[in-house]
Image 1: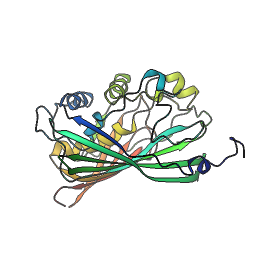
Image 2: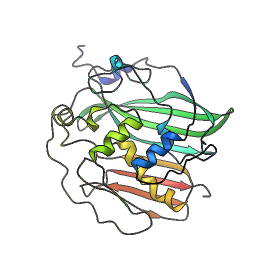
Image 3: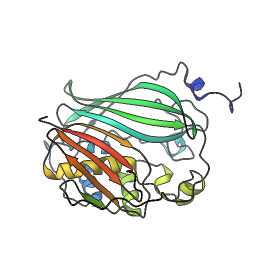
Image 4: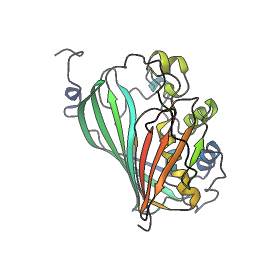
Length: 288
């Protein structure tokens, strides 16, 4: 079987990377930087302050050498990167369960593993879904468990040079409404803060000419964090959070956050230049 005709599943038969452990003291500085990207005062200013859900994404960062990067800006090889030729990566969503928040000043340990690998066929061809699981502990006690769903395809899609059609619904003015106006500086700062060198976020010729997008792509993790912002600003602690990235959001269009509150949590969504949401989520409250 040639490389061109081999099933994507064939490349990951027997692929079972070992667990990885990373340890870090949680300095409040990265959270201050993230708050600046969101144009808000930082909720994490001193040791002992809790990190809001997903703000740990500013910690435990992979910092490869320049020579270790692939043509897309991601690491060319790594423990949790499946051995697929012509590999292209898309962040699809995730789940977070918070037993107790991480706090600034603590020495935390993240233990990571590949929890699930599944090959599927979509409209664009074969896809490989990889679920990474991360367990965060402090002094041997589990604080958080996170799963991230990452989708890989073998080949770049043909360029689609038109932006999504449709109009996002107007903000409803309710307590979960929030409007973001991402700029090129926003994308640059978030890429730098999370050490994400994926070129779709800052290299317009690459994003449009190679990956086939109509413009620079707003980070999926930024959308996931932004959907939680109204609840954070309302002071509602979140115990569980599940989000799905449904379609890319592009630079030049506002991101409109909205949602519906109920007795146990909130259903959240992010719209950007299309009637269908770019991302959806469900948050469950700490006291639910």
